[in-house]
Image 1 (tube, rainbow, N blue to C red):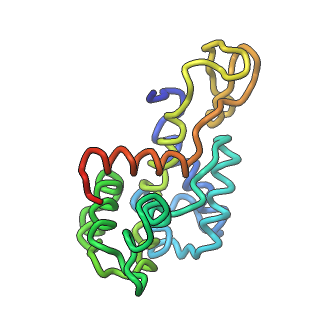
Image 2 (spheres, rainbow, N blue to C red):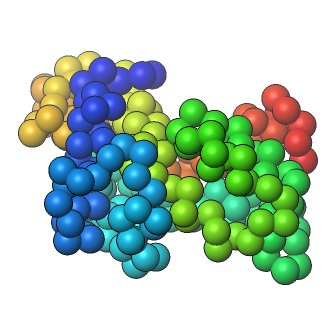
Length: 192
């Protein structure tokens, strides 16, 4: 269900704040299409800090594993990465479908079989990361899992809580959503 309590713009705004705090830069300099690595200078540990801040802000659980790891886990070792740690054609097809709406066209064109997996973090932008957050928020159940009522409201414009009992909304986590998406995409496109 597409929730309407937290806007896409609010998600991007809060993600910019989290990135600015983590990277000690001015949030006003961050654009939605800024690459966290190339434009903002984020390193691998910075992603953990940004994820933690986002989780605290929205009361969600971000994915702990990258899509490549889930492809390997679900469809077998060697499905996403060759023995040299380079992307397979199947992984590229899946990644292009996943990132199509969230990543600038030139970045998608750079996504090619044989590409080193370490080049993927450069493609993560504020907008693509915000899409992952929105996907989680959109798993808002129709009714509260604590009291069964449908009385959702926001607190501080970022947390969805039950207006009847005050319980935080219960969402699916990011890893489960990636696995569901991979299975659905595989069923539809027969890539693997």
